[in-house]
Image (cartoon, rainbow, N blue to C red):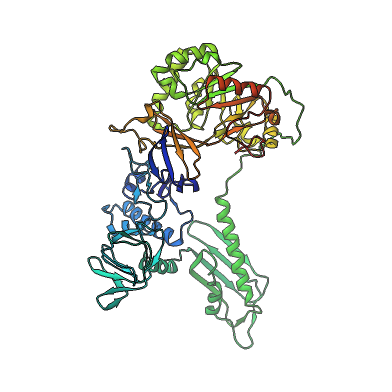
Length: 616
């Protein structure tokens, strides 16, 4: 399956808000910096089908039925062209129809193409742009008359907007000279009436919806009634139960009988036409009889015509059950999970301190760190030569673990495997922190000799997920409350448990670089990711979200503006306390460790959820 059209699932509510991108204290960009253009894969459709894609997904979340109908109609048209070996030429009108039903600054090919995509984000506007139809050449603010030369057709009932406004106007008057029209064609100079607002000459005008297109969609939807074709045989004989058989062309068959017995007719015998009319009452079902054979004896009467309806309903239900059961997932056997809702008296002392250094600072003397049991370092630093000395020192001073990235791009896989192998030879590595399912395959050769720690990204929300994970230590999700955390830690068998008690939790890991404005590195990039500057997204409430680029894979991590600081007395059933460090100094890190070791909540910064009612 592949996402073929629509928003790529990344655009939650926060992505539709305006942000400023800061380099240290200076603004270097602003706008809707997390708002992606909608994906359109129409141009790439032949390649997608050629590589074996069998299902195309359309993101129609919060869209109108007309959107879904238009997109599915157009993609169905071009899929059929490919399957029928027709010449693949895309009709410009189909592109316009896709743009008309919804687009945000045009379309993008997302991450599907091989070349760097600098059109992923449209920062000017977060919602539907529509189609550009022309500029205001004259505006009479008293009458609300707008004059323009049309680039696209318009009709009464279309909706439009202007570039400096968010207001949506419905066209109710189209004039040319002294005459009124219901529509106007491209290249005509017309006047639109009854438009009053923040409108100026030269403003761009966009058609947000097309009444003609919506009418076509509604008409096609009313005609579209795709149903499964079935055949039926009905036997009606004197003093015998009425029998109905239905079947399809895939060897599915159902036979049902009625308890009613036909009788000899006194006045009006039942006819085949009447029986057939009753059988064909399938309006609320996904089925349609293409063939009906009725074996009816002469001069018979049915005491209850409703018996035909009951036969039809029973047969259809049994047939539907047969079809449904074929697609039900077969259970391989019941899996038993041992789980207790009570907490045992586990030891609440000697918790190990695990320290994640999200950023390595070449100017820091990390040998001054105190009371660290495990040290996690992101994989990217093991690839960069300038960190070789500092990693060597860390390896000698601490139990060192390689912290794998949330996203591992296929084209960097060999590079990162080489980095891992070289690191295992150069440094005293104790294990790995795994952040996605693919890491299990990547680390299969090293599983027996190194400790594997399952990161919270693996959605460790319950005992079943923890027990099924082939790791030595689990990191419990920070989205749970204290009761859930302690129960999971208490019920973990043959595994250590870990919980993040301090740190800024990543809000988003994106396969897109905010600094380079692309999904891949390209030759003329400014390479800001290699600078020592700090980058932030500032929202409309002036909260600062730390932005950390990965200068190897073109990946960006955006961190929460607040720091989680948990009273460790509330999560004493976990084995390890993890501390996530971003920009703190050595002195601050040691102070944090000391507070955590003494099971206190750290005070004095911009923290959130210290009481652990909810951690996020």
